[in-house]
Length: 121
Length: 107
Image (cartoon, rainbow over all chains, first blue to last red; front, top):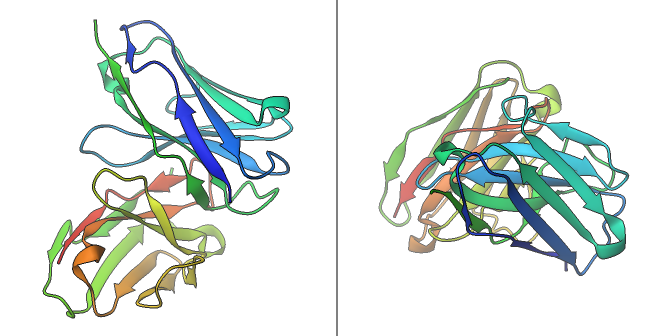
């Protein structure tokens, strides 16, 4: 059974860069799409972007100028980098997999448990 | 981007009283690529329904999805206290993939 675990700093200073990693176990990184979603405290869900195991990416235009998602197939992990963060980027960050292999337009399942990132000085 | 509007915002029900949750899209969703997720307090979202009406593995048959085009419904028959959660719809037919704002179900 695929398991996803997010890791990274829980506190990031304003204007700095947020970096998170999602480690996958119990399955194969290929040939799937992998994704990042975030949820500000007490609010709804926002899709950040997705990456195919080959490295092809698809970003939400609202964040595209600040986001990079990368994949390391040798380590069964993928990463999120978000630069120039502000308090508005404070959120619970989830990683997830697209449900079906090689399916860009697909539901998200399974999900990691999420990691809270606070942007504050 | 496609905007999803969920109604009602909150839904208080008694155990056994059927729950009907609505999700309306600002434009037609390609191939009815719509999912429903359940998020209990302090937990990650859990997939319930995909492709508008297909139940995910391990999901109780008390949960059912229906609809097409712009209008979709999640029905929970015989709700139990454990079904208390926020329910989100999501469209994945067009990038950027978007979520509704959620319906809070209280049993």
